[in-house]
Image (cartoon, rainbow, N blue to C red; front, side, top):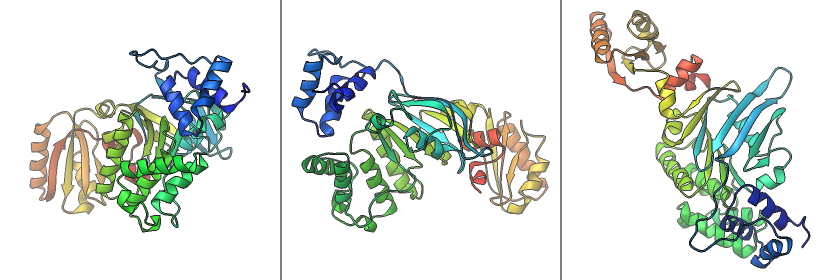
Amino acid sequence: MDPQHPVTKYIQDASKQGMSNEEIVRELTAAGWQVEQILDAVLKHAMPVPVPIPGQAAPIAAADNIITVKNITKSYDHKTKAVDNVSLEVRRGSITGLLGPNGAGKTTLVRILTTLLPPTSGQATVAGFDVVHQAQQLRSAIGLAGQYAAVDAILTGRENLEMVGRLYHLTAEQAKARANELLKQFNLEDAADHLSKTYSGGMRRRLDLAASLIMRPRILFLDEPTTGLDPRGRFDMWDVIRDLVEGGTTVLLTTQYLEEADQLADYIFVIDHGHIIAQGTADELKRQVGGDVLELHLVDHHLAPQVAGSLKNLGDEPPQANAGSGIITMPTSKGAQVLVEVVRMLDDQNIKLHDVMLRRPSLDDVFMKLTGHGAEEANK
């Protein structure tokens, strides 16, 4: 076999990344290569793949970080920078969230990391591959589900998955078998032979995610995976993502839903206007706000700015008011004391409340403190 044969080259690259024999063979057989071809590459060319010893665990990867981004910038002209000098690292086997509003640069960064868009400057490696110079090798290691479900409406769910498998050079039999596995995994068996144009939004999202997993990628990029889903569909998708990570997949997801990042992400990067403005676990980010948050829901929404002005000396920071929703939030370290004081003040002013609460900070509070505006406001 030629040393430049794709099987040989793949084994070399995979070994350098610390993949185990089992992982290498599984990936190659899933792609359609026969065991004899794989053995031929190993035995004839003495590839550096350690022989597994019965009873011993497979070797683990040397590096904890599976994605490394250094000073990545993407400019569309001399003035507009969609991503501006971003650096980050993603740990293997984790869920990492890119949190920010529309236009923050999240999707641009994902497109760079998935080889769909070249960076203007900087460097990024994913699974040990350079996103620019080793794009072809990288594509075999990743899966991508974009903001909108990329399914063919005139094909059935089963046909969509089999088509993707064939595009990855699986045999017809292998593509059919893999499609059956994914239809069962994503609870789509009953609708497998229905045209996908008849699917609900949640079903189309699940089918799209299933298609991104045809080749069992080690890294899955999810660009706003629950956009447009109802609450039940969103919760179901969260469960699917958690199950994938339990199975060993690393997930990088973008979201503008603060609750989603809070529920799923082991680590969060907050992005605004192309810059990473904060990072940490959800709890670490919430501690940046400090103390508790007093939240008032006014009956008369238009009074929110006026009421906020009267409360400005009672909290740790000036309160934030939304005249549209009638909600006022104010960080405070005084606990129940300030709650009682505020309720008495508003009662004296004959200000009516729908609700009042003292709660722990949310990621929305973090975003407000970091940017001066909430995530929803930023999207307008």
